[in-house]
Image 1 (cartoon, rainbow, N blue to C red):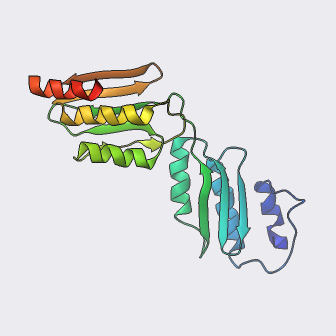
Image 2 (image 1 turned 60 degrees about the horizontal axis):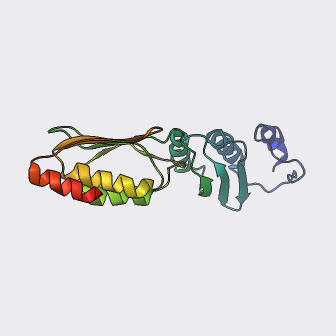
Image 3 (image 1 turned 30 degrees about the vertical axis):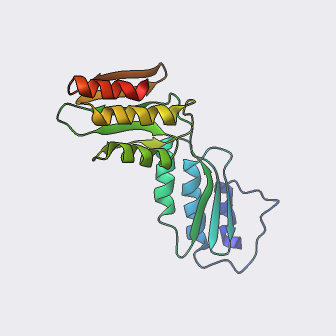
Length: 192
């Protein structure tokens, strides 16, 4: 780190045994230190950032699912030509792990809560084959078999007249209104 940035290093809680003062830092080093200082606020106490050339690698776990999104937005605006690598940032754990898919009568489908990954989100989109108001966030902590059951719930809601499926700390709750008897049988066949 450059000598004049030494005071800023204390804000980042850098390991002084691994940090040495030297000349030759990039012109925008102070901006990088500011970005790192801001970025660490989204992470739990076990975070680590390493600058190598034009790449900054970030390790750690997001504090909350909302702060994970904020970190992604922060990484989209790096200083100068810096590349931000967030591959080693883990999702926050949501507790309780709440997820809802809702289809009001005549209204737009809505999905809220948490999902364990983007692949499940894409699978639900494919199953529904319609527009969806999606405010879900990615988070760890999904119960066993969550992906399979959430996909079944989306299939049921997709073919139903209206309804709501909720997962919370108590388990699964379902309230589905079929269009007619034939539709009701199709929905029941998904689960049996």
